[in-house]
Image (cartoon, rainbow, N blue to C red; front, side, top):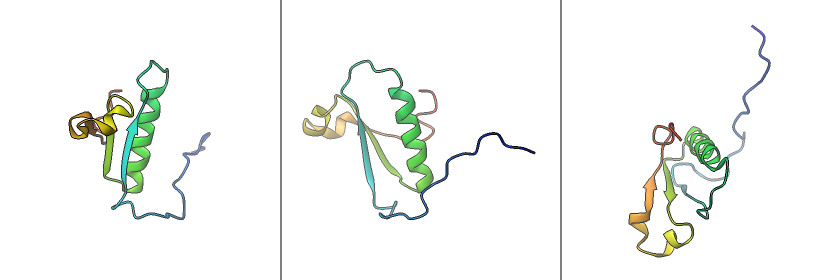
Length: 83
């Protein structure tokens, strides 16, 4: 079997313990082609590294400051599959 494309692999050296890392992904809210694909790719890649605390933050930077828990959504590979 001959592979035409090889999948990029994870970094050999990991500088932070993935079990302790928390990630928040937000955008500015404007229509931007490709944003969903980037978010989906980030979530899947972070999951492969072992990061379990990945959140999507609604309302851009305002989502970090105003009653933040209700603007945060837990993300995992299954939750971003359809975007």
